[in-house]
Amino acid sequence: MFFQQVADGGCQSYVIGCAESCAAAIIDPALGQIDRYVGIANREGLRVRYIIETHTHADHFSAARQLAERMGATVVMHRNSPAPHVAMRVDDGHLIAVGALRLKVMHTPGHTRDSMCLHVDDRVFTGDTLLIGGTGRTDLPTGDPAELHRSLFARLLLLDRETLVFPAHDYKGRTHSSIGTEIDGNPRLQVRDEAAFIEMMRGLNLSAPTHLTEALRTNMSGGKTVRQLLAEAALGVPFVSLEGLAGRLEGKRNDFVILDVRERDAYARGHIPGALHLARGQLELKVDETFPDPNLEILTVCELGKISTLAAATLRELGFGRAVALDGGMKSWREGGFPMETGEDPALLI
Ligand SMILES: [Fe+2]
Image (cartoon, rainbow, N blue to C red; front, side, top):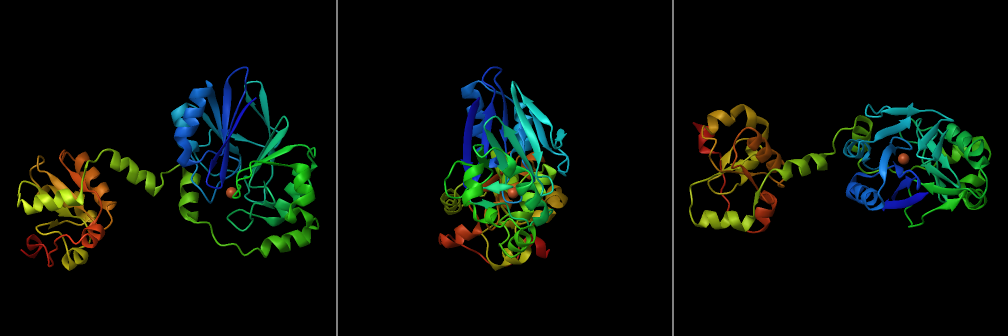
């Protein structure tokens, strides 16, 4: 068996492959590690057949859809998963064949309704059902402490004590544990009484994970994160540095346009000298009357340098092939002590 654990902060993901056939699966891939998974598969000569998610993650961004597209693999989740990009839905007791390997699905709801563990040979991938010295929380959407109690005590913990435990998270740098070690030492598993277990889980009072809504939105829909959207826009846009723009202003060059795409009041409070104003929300509607010449060099500016990147990408898509964005935004411009001007755009006052 080929096996490699890939950590991304506290998130643990796994590449598991059949040594005979070179078929492989990736379990719980994280968006920030796409190049690593591709690199591992290439280096080891693995053909990744399945991307398996142990559950709908609420705390990090899944790479499942992107990896599946890139590797020609099938996304596998429990049948309760809401994600539309899941191509193979599985249920308790099913075997996922990865070459000669057989990953046995154990439906273990509780952390989420679609949680499952994957048991193969000497190890079990426990997702967030069982962590090292802990369990997944049960207070996020579709969580249920009674179901988690059942999944642990009536299912997972009945596996052989020697079975190795590989969870979806560990924040202390530990790689794995075993069922026996967890039964003996995991504080939450010492509370075997169902009512007491439920009370303990309900009383945890944990703070919501950062990016909760964005993670659920992207992981449940297969949509993009805001960061991805910006990164993709940035791939097709050249940037001009703050100093570069300042130099051009000093040279009093008038062969390009600075376009401030913030809201009107922000522009009036202070903008780059000579900048025109067209709010991002009006860009597509007013671009033709504002800029009749598609060969014009337009340099977009916003507060933080993100919306201006989207604006420059939109302008390029519309045919303004010389659209560029400021590398940074008005915040950095002000903090850098570069020249400012106040007041409305004269064109708006006509
Ligand atoms: Fe989770």
